[in-house]
Length: 423
Image 1: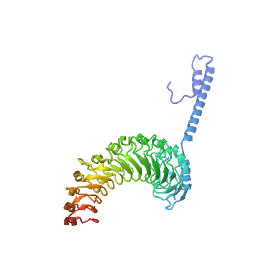
Image 2: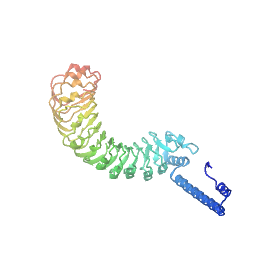
Image 3: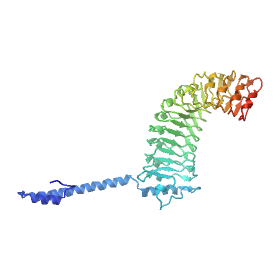
Image 4: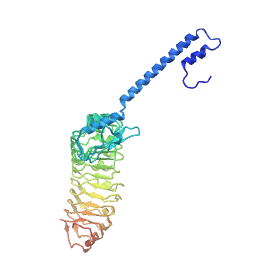
């Protein structure tokens, strides 16, 4: 006989008892089988009950997530643009302004930027166990990131830039192993970057702490971030040397350390950063030779080593990145002549070599720089005449040749620079 579905114990007993020549103990066996079946069934139901009990203990229901979001709103002291006006108890949390849910109805993103919200970050957000993106830049949140956010292991992106957060950079962020993007720039953070912050940063692609009051050295542990594409630590008070190994990060493209008090030589380390698109070492205390070698890197578009104590000559530029648009080596102790090869950098829009000890003359072939907007060479020992070729650079806006040792008159051809605003 073929059975469909789960067999009924009563039916089994009836069939067995009706079998011709059944054993006299068959009824006893039937009762035992029935009890065994019922016992197994009760155990299965009990296990199922505990399974769902455990599931509900670790999963937040949409109703609970609504309560969490309303607690976040309760911590807001001022909402000048009524950005949270539809965050009401009767509403669906997935319809709240700036809230985005996944297909299961759980909060996945909170995006409230440039809304001027005032208040403190609610610890209750740690209950949003599906939250991946927290973007609250351009507000006025104070205090610090609550310790409870250490439970948000699902977070991919934290952007709390341009707020009024203060205190130390929370060390627990280093335990959030899914972080791809971390931006705490333009706040009031102080102290040092915790060494453990880069403990589990294998997935991290971008970090910014710019425009804070951070101090101490840049932790060598940043080299653990093997997928890091860029970091911005500019406008702080970092000291010490550039950590070795930072350019061993194979995909690093963006490095900004502008306006700190960093010291030492960077030539050996930075010369290994062959994938850089953006390098800003300006306004530090770096010494030795500037890392001019990377000017020939294929992707480099921005190069700034200004306002340091670099010395020596600008080497011959045999190759030049076809993408190079910005070149600033002003306010150093550079000497020697301007290399002729600079005129091969045809994408250049900005050149500032002012306030150095450069000599020689302005390179011939300057007209090759057809995209040039700004050329600053003041306060050097440059001699010779002003090349008439400048007149063929149509988009030139600023030509700074003050305090040089030039002779002769200003070429009439420069009057062709119809956009020139300063000479």
